[in-house]
Every structure is written in structure tokens, then in C-alpha cells.
Length: 531
Image 1 (spheres, rainbow, N blue to C red):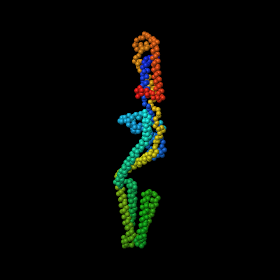
Image 2 (image 1 turned 90 degrees about the horizontal axis):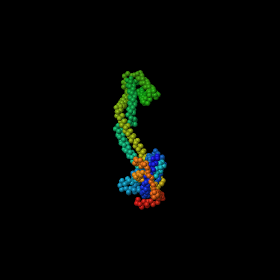
Image 3 (image 1 turned 135 degrees about the horizontal axis):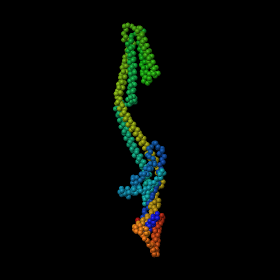
Image 4 (image 1 turned 60 degrees about the vertical axis):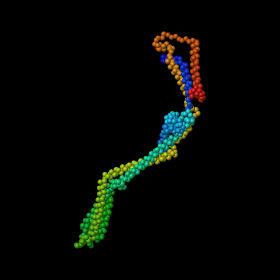
């Protein structure tokens, strides 16, 4: 620690030997620096404050009905991020006529970069209160730039939203037209497909399997009707084979024919009704059981009537009579002919149903392929229709949102402080700069004096000489100052202090001028040629 103190003291003595260099350089640096500071142009700062109101009464009313173009907060964030974009800056140049200064694209870019550096845009966070500031030597230009920026900031919201809505609406309208065209093509393809495969498509009665099942049910019903007619024909044939002519004792032919026909009609109707019930119910159903008993009773009644007729005919049989002339026989033959015709008709119906079922069974592969193609066409059409309906709904919502934005802005601007320029310049801070000049001058003088002391050292102590030469120092002789030398040294010290005090005094004068707003320093700077 002792060696460090000794070293510092030695440096101080070396610097003190060149104290006039220190003072002269300080004076030179301070005078030049203060003159430069005095000649710095005044910078006037224009500011404006604007409040962005994002609370809209119409927004909650249209919730779910109109398309939300984005939250107001995101819109504000986008506007603040894009305020200093290239298009906005070029627009600012045109609004302030600064573009007249730019003759080439390079000069225009330099102007834009210079404006960006001097523009200040600050926000108050969640309060949505923004401050726009600009610094320029001309207060009128500073105010014009802030006013233009405020106009761009307020108009950017409406313009961007309108452009976004227009482009979105145009895109949706194009998509709707495209889907309408595709739906028309799909409908034409589906119609053409139905015309080409009309025999294999699902109709009102169902599809292929439903048609096959229905045809099989009809075949079963036709076969049942055929069996009923065949049984009736067999009965008529048996009756006709055992019929003999009878007169007198037996009932008259008209009575027998009327009774048998009535019973046969009731049996036939009951059988048809039974077949219909069997298609819906089982054999144990009460209605089925009751109807079967009724049919059995009618058959028994008819059999009894025929037996009675045959018995009467046997008792009253007259030899030599031609059976073909018997009216009852003739009536029974007529009924048999009708039954044969009915059987033939029923058989034709059964054969037709069988042929249709055979054709359906043979066309199962074609039917499956046609149904698959139809399902694919219907699915494609339904997808197109669904997307088309959604796009139409979105287009209507977009139109409603556009009308809502037109009549009631979702973001409103309120200018709190219009653009204004204070009477006093905002920069430069001449008192601070002058103080920095004084400190820099003293520091520069001290550095020069210190370097000179190191370049031209002296040996004022024995140990320093010993360290420098490496030789032992036997002794030292003190300097004996005469009275004249002491007075001269005192005069030099007083002169140094006076010169240093003069520097401080000039600094005080400069600070007074800057603080009081006088123009003495600028005039002095102009007088010495630092203009």
C-alpha cells in the first residue's frame, strides 16, 4: 500500500510539471466544445396524444350472427406495428412534401430512415393511450409530421378493415360460384346415371333387396292362390266324375248350382283373407285359427250338399238318360272350365314372378355396382351441397359484418391532445453538453500532461534513480531556492490558479447564458467562425 501511494504521488508530480499543458489543452478543448454546442441547431418536439376506444355496443348484439373480423386489441396491435411501415412512410413523405427533397430512390430511403429514427410512438399499455412525437429543427415541420402521422394512424384502421372485408367477400363469392358450378355438374351426372340405370336403382318401394323380398312375397302369395285354384279344380273334377242325371227326387239344378256357388264364393273369399292374415301373423293367431275353422265348416257344408244331391240322384236314376243333358252336370262342367282358366292365369302370374326373381338374382352384381356408384355420386353431391350452404351462410355473415362496421366502427379514436409544439426547444441539452465539454477538456489536458511526464521523466528521489540505473546512490543534495526563484514559482502558481479560475468562470458564464436563454454564445461562435 505504501509503494502504491508513493507511485501515485510520483505520477502526480510528473503531471504537475506539465500543468500548463494541462490548462492550455483544457482551455482549447472547452472553447471549441462550447462554441460547437452553442451552434447546435435547436430541435423542437411536436407531440399528440390519442385514445383508442375498443368498446362497441354493436359487437355483443351481433355475436353469433356476423363474422368477427378480429378482436379490437389485435387490430390496434397491428396498427401500431405497421405505423412505420414502408407504404405509410412513403405516404407521410407525400403529405409533408418531403418527397420533393428526394431526387433519387436512394435519397428517398435516406429520408425515410431519418424520419423513422426521429419518430417516437409510445403506448400506455392496457389504457390504449398512445403518444406520437417527432423532433425537427423546424417547429412547423415537426407539427405537420405529427399531424400526418395521426391521420395515417386513424385512417389505417378503416382502410385495412375494408380491404380485408372486400378481399374476403370476393374470395367467398368466387368459391360460392365455383361450388354452384360443381353442384350443377354433379346433378347432371346423377341424372344421367339414373337414366342409364333406372332399372337397378332404389325407387319409392326400396332398393334391390327390398324389391327382391317384395317379389318373393308376391310369389308366395301367387303360389298360394294357384294352390287354392288347383284344389278347387280338383274338387270340381271329382264332383264331375261322380255326377249322374237326376230328376224329381233330387233338388232342382238351379237350387244346387246356386247353393254350391255361394259356398264356393265364401270359401274363396275366406281363403284369400286367410292368405293375407298369414302374411302378417303366425298360424297360432286367433284370427287365423277362427278363419280356418270357418273354411272347414264351409267345406263340410258343401260336401254335405253335394252328397245329398248325389244320393237323391242315385235314388231317382232313370236308365237311358244322357248325362250330358243334365243341367247340373253342364253347370259343373262350366265351373270346371272357369276354374281351369283361373288356374292357367294364376300359373302365368307365378311364372312371371319366378322370372322376375331369377332376373333380380342374376343382376345382383350389376345392382351392387350401380348402388355403390349411386352412393358415391350422392355422397359427392351432399359434400358439395354442405360446403356450398356453409359458404353461403358465411357470405351472408360477412355482408352483415361489413354493414355493421360501416354503420358503427368497432374502433374509435379520440384525440386527447392535438399536435402541438412547445415554445422552448426539446434539444439539445446545452447545459449538460457544456458540462460534458468541461469535463472532457480537463480530462484531455490531464491525459496529455501525464503522457508528457512519462515521456520526459525526472529523478526526484534516490530510490527511483537506483531502480532506473541499477547503481547504488551514495547520497543526494537538496535544492536551495533563492528568494527570487521562490517568488517566480509563486507567481507561476498564482497564474495557474487564476487561469484555472478563469476557465471555471467562463464555464459559469456559459451555463448562465444557456439557462437564461441568451444568444451571446451563438453570436460568439459565429464571430470566431464556427458557423
